[in-house]
Image 1 (tube, rainbow, N blue to C red):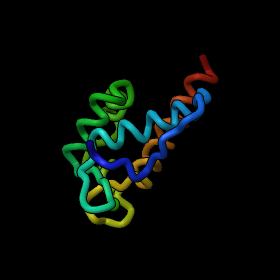
Image 2 (cartoon, protein in one colour):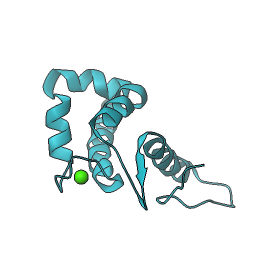
Image 3 (cartoon, rainbow, N blue to C red):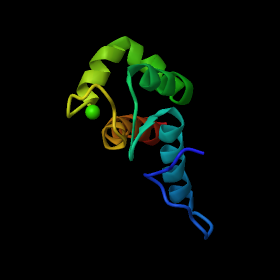
Image 4 (cartoon, protein in one colour):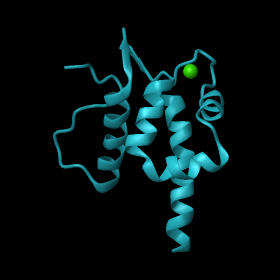
Length: 105
Ligand SMILES: [Ca+2]
């Protein structure tokens, strides 16, 4: 099995929020490429992750963003790969949008 450098294994039962955090770690790890101690997404993997795991966001994104624009914005250090930390920046934008929709519904 692939190493899971970003997540710990838990012995106690997880809270709802901890379960959600763990799910984010798991999803990222499912798509990333492991190189040494790091695990990063290249553009095709990011695309696959967004299309498979964030389909609602993918549909909305098509109106205002291209994948290239999104990737360039999120890739802060410009290494053409998305680290977990960079992914979380992207994810925080998705969550804010999600929260706005939740509050207004
Ligand atoms: Ca990067």
